[in-house]
Amino acid sequence: MNDAAIDYAGVFQCLPGMVALLTPDLVYADANEEFLRVSGRRRDQVVGRYLFDVFPDNPNDGAASGMRNLAASLQRVLDTGERDAMALQRYDVEDPERQGEWQERYWSPVNAPVLDQDGKVVLLVHRVEEVTELIKARGGPSGSRARVLEAELYTRARELQELNERLRQSHAREREVALALQEAMLPGCRQAGQRQAAVRYRPAVGALNVCGDWYDIVDLVGGNRIGVSVGDVVGHGLAAAGVMGQLRSALSAASRVAAGPAEALNVLGRYAHVVNGAESATAVTTFIDFDEHTISYSSAGHPPPVLVHADGRVEFLDQATDPPLDASPDPIPRPQASTAYAEGATLALYTDGLVERRREDLGTGLARLAESLARHRGLDCESLADAVLLELLPAGGATDDTALVIVRL
Image (cartoon, rainbow, N blue to C red; front, top):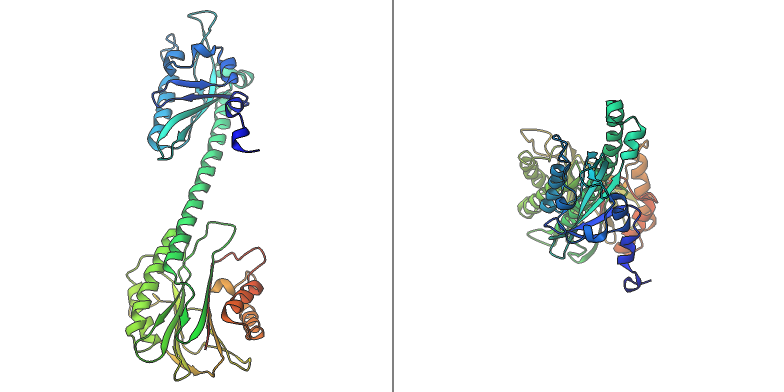
């Protein structure tokens, strides 16, 4: 069924609850049958009239606050463009058959905006549930204050449910923004010198935990060389994504002028000390010289890169490992190591989401990665990256972000 076939006016009239539409000037634009029935009003007594002319406060009750509270709620919706759930209200209604006689009534109202394409509030949805019988059944305000509070708790519980839903939506929007930020800051697939490289980033699934994993591939000054790095920032959401961007950019710049990877990490470590949120961040960087067939590397608390030689032999680049970036206020020169490779080797850098599992030794995850890389080493970089992620990430997705860079040497 398409939209044109749906009678929305008919749907509105049949809604199972009291619902009215108000203009921003609080004039009734429409009211459904249930609203008119429960309030005891005809359509001509409501539509086109000002809200508080139709339902004023009880003039015999000097403490009446229903009109004031409802007006404040509707104004909040107009000001913020967001739904507002009100607490339980006593709002007496004049008997339509007996002028001057007022009926004690209790209501649970919710007010929501209808927005146009520019985000402007053009209508207010005023939904009301009458709870008078609930109050009376529980003893009424004269019988027991505790029972009235019980009804109030019922209303508050429903309001909390609505607030939780809005919070969930807000977190979901933050996740989308953080992912977009990460995608904008992380480079895509590109040529690595005369070789092919594949990059992958997989966010954690099933939650709002956008983290600070990152990678980078840069051309180095002098010779046929590139720098390949990965890193991990502790934390979640936009804050972690922002710190990630700062550290990645700083290391990218430092690598272009540093004599080696250790010097680049030294510079990054000093910078990390003045970046809020960079505590315990890790990184590893490798400088690949395609002419000399060598890889120099240095690590700041990060899992070791994996070098799969052309004959299938696996080498973990773990001979130059140091604490995380901000571990020392007075940075000591970090260690650096190098290794040689032959044509056709494969280098893989990654973040811990690829190899770490709860209640499992890290060595088991590293061995699983090494075996997968070696077994699939004959594939091109793109296919190899996909195969590794398919085998190592859980079927339902990882609980931590994962970054992976593969370079064919």
